[in-house]
Each structure stands twice: as C-alpha cells, then as structure tokens.
Image 1 (spheres, rainbow, N blue to C red):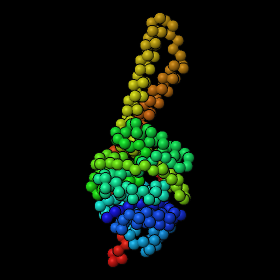
Image 2 (cartoon, helix red, strand yellow):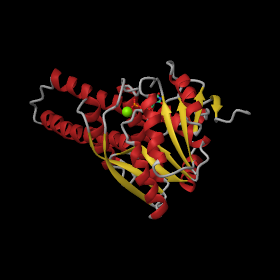
Image 3 (cartoon, rainbow, N blue to C red):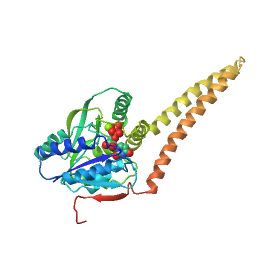
Image 4 (cartoon, rainbow, N blue to C red):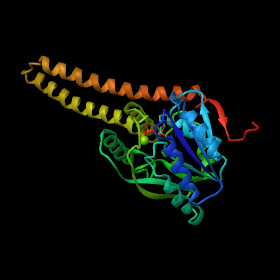
Length: 309
Ligand code: UDP
Ligand code: MG
C-alpha cells in the first residue's frame, strides 16, 4: 500500500482542487493507497471540507491536531499515522505536482531506491520568498554536513524502512529534508519545476521560513559557532596589530592616543562579543527545547474513514 501525507493549515480555498488532483494522480498508477491529511489546527473550514470529501473519497484519512504545531510537526504526525509500505510527502498548496508521485513510485519499486526526493530545477514566479529560499539553499549546500542537499524540500517518497529510520529521530527541532538525507539508504531524485502556490497566502510566514532555515543550519552544520570563532580570531588579529602600533607610538613618544581609536575598539569588541553571545544563546535555547522533551503534537481526532470507530 502507498500512503501520502499532506499537511494542511487554513487552506479552505484549494482543498477541493488538492483532493481531486491528488486522487486522480494516484489512481493513474495504484489502487491501494491512503491519503492522510494532517489538519494542523486550521481555523477556517479546512477540516469540515476534508471530512465532507472523505464521504466521496473513502481512501482519505484526516488527522486533526489539537493546535497549530507547525508544518514539520504536522508532517511527522502524518508519517507516524501512515501504514503504507511506501510513503509520500507533499505540501498541501499544490506547489509540488502530485502527478510526479507516479514517477517516484516507479523509481522506488522498479529501480530499487529507498528514498526519492523531488529536486527543484526551477521555480515559477519571482518574489522575495523564492529569492530567500535560493539564498538558503546556496548557504546550506556549502555549510551543512549533509550531501546532495541542494534544492530538495519535503516533496518525497520513502520505503517503510526509511520512514521508520526517520521516525526514530525524536528531536524537537526538526528539519525533515535534512533528516531524510541523514538516514542514508539508497537515495534518488526526480527533477521538477516548482509551481506557484495555487491559491491563498503562504501559510509559512517569512519569519517562520527564517526559523526553519535557522533550524536546518543549527542542526546540520557547525557554521554558527564557527562564525563566532572566526570573528573572535579576526578581532584578536586586528587588536594585536593595533596594540603593536600603540606600543611603538608610546616608545617613540608620539602617542596621541585619541578618542576615535578607543571608541572603535569598544564598538568592534563589543559587537563581536554580542554576536557570540547571541549564537551561544541560540545553542542554549535549542538544548533547552530538546531537554523539555515535549511531544511534537497532540491529536484531536483521527478520522480514519472507518465508521465503526
Ligand atoms: N502548513 C502547516 N502548518 C503551518 C504552516 C503551514 O501545516 O503552521 C502547511 C500549509 O498548509 C502547506 C504546507 O504546510 O500545505 C506548506 O506551507 P506554505 O506553502 O505556506 O510554505 P512554503 O511553500 O513557503 O514552504
Ligand atoms: Mg508553499
């Protein structure tokens, strides 16, 4: 069986399209499937619409979370409730074409891959988000300890063994594309051009997007703490030179050690220290989050399409 996991947060405007397109894309190549929609605490009609559509399409299951826990937690919840031997993941805004699941499925069942990620060879539309995403991938590719992380997101398909491996990682701060690469197995790719969101506003605000990028960088690289080290080293070198100059000036008696040099060194050292403190703070915060060890999400109700329950 094939399971597809789709998180949904306030997407009432596109749910009809989403369900119809996904169902017909799947039925083109497989009979035995389930689609798990994870309603991430939507405040609009998303949940009701999904439950109505479930009557028409009985292979739909709806996992309703008790609050908005964020898109990575929603995916995790869906993966945990999925029962298929192969599991696909897709955003619920139709930026990733469900028609590609057929190709992913073929690669997994015929070419013996365990994990297939959608690789964005392009992105329709130009805006700030696209630009920032591009910058993030450029940085992440260069600083992360992971390989082949270029331009992959959540759109993917995995064999059960890979899903189980992914779910064994219990960290609170989660960047699933990174974790998916980290588990290894035989990884493959399909290229596609990412569409524009089919309807409505992005549900990941820019600030949520930046947080996700920070999570990825903190979890999969030493870049932030290295940055502090390099800044510190730069500071040390600059001030060794400056100190040397001061001593010479003193020795030769032309020392007019003025206000500007004092102020500059205070600013310079102060800012390096503040940056370092901020970075260390981020690490402390993340350690704190992990040590709280809270559940990633709570379930309001699982509508599995089985009327007896
Ligand atoms: N989403 C979610 N919880 C959230 C924010 C978003 O489940 O708190 C869902 C959203 O409904 C969509 C997917 O996650 O299906 C991706 O969100 P969005 O398109 O806003 O993000 P982006 O395309 O910028 O990554
Ligand atoms: Mg989107």
